Amino acid sequence: MFLDGTCPKPLATCAPAPAPATRLAPPLPAWAALGLLLLAALGAVGYGLRDSHRDEALLTSPRAGDIYTVHAGGTGTYSLLKVLRAGGNGVELVANEYQTTDSNPIALLNQASRYSQEPFVITRLDLQIMRRRGELTDVDRP
Image (cartoon, rainbow, N blue to C red; front, side):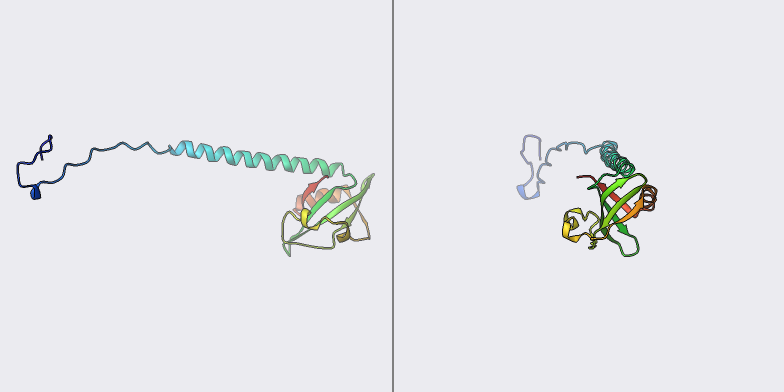
């Protein structure tokens, strides 16, 4: 086939003219995609560190109404402890009588009828130790 579209041979033996090559948009460079993923990961880590520091600060100065999420390592269940009073080195708590496998059980378990009627006292140091062992996973202050 000639450039003008005519064919010197019979039409059946003429090959069609090749389509003009089109240029596709270049793909996103790998370094740019990795940069975006790195920024997202740093944001998530930064948020986790900020939340961890906030929890540590709340543990050092407990107030009545604070709610601690506790993890029972062997069973993989979570429950809540609620601060009744904090004074001196002791913190008076009541335990929630229910457990769940949800790692954020506050919405599910935080009802007055689900807490024990018998308070117990624990030291602030014991709370810090529980936090470091991973037994106390979250601190909420309403």
